Image 1 (cartoon, rainbow, N blue to C red):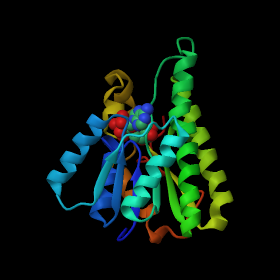
Image 2: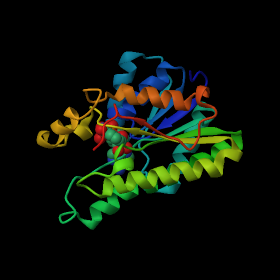
Image 3: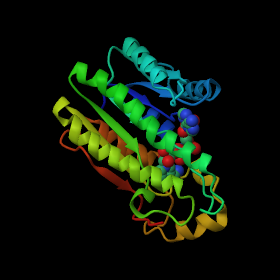
Image 4: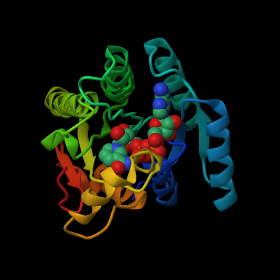
Length: 247
Ligand code: NAD
């Protein structure tokens, strides 16, 4: 589905991002996997190479807080693969403190990665995509971007903002043949969910109509579809992949 395409996936070292990287590689893309630390990037690369030593995958750890570093890393990706077709903004963090305990620096940290860095990466990617005649930007949102959640205000606030960024970029960049979409996962079996206390997560899982948590591959399948030409008329969408769960 992605033969000949070149992609970047942020937060690609584990969880949902890693599943997206693997699915893109299995479907013919060349992929640059980005993570926050070189050690975790190298570990992810090693495990992908064990699966298939011929996969065209490189790893990098640019600081997503710095526009110039992102620009430099994207230029390196373009020089390596000859182009940049797909930018997946997947890296994200959360905190679940109540409003009374929530530290302003935690709120800022979450907004900076979950929203500001998506703006930075999308802007730098769009410049390259416009030059080459088009591309696809995909963002990992969350089901809490639709309903909010009863604790941890920064995370849903960041994902509401991400949906706004997605829809607005889609409207602005359509003329440059750049599609922009988001996937809003429900409760997905990754380290992020493992970190939530079981007394909080179990009632949520019980309430999921499909009767189970999602797996990272369930989300990767939606990214694969939206990245592919099968979704060539889809832009500005926030696709829920949540088993009809509600927080
Ligand atoms: P995870 O914690 O397993 O992975 C997070 C990824 O983000 C890692 O690769 C990590 O290296 C990267 N990352 C963290 N901080 C970073 C930083 N400062 N700079 C660069 N990279 C950084 O989480 P996950 O569950 O796979 O989450 C991936 C995305 O999915 C996030 O945007 C998250 O908000 C979203 N999401 C997850 C769930 C879920 O249930 N797991 C549900 C909805 C949305």
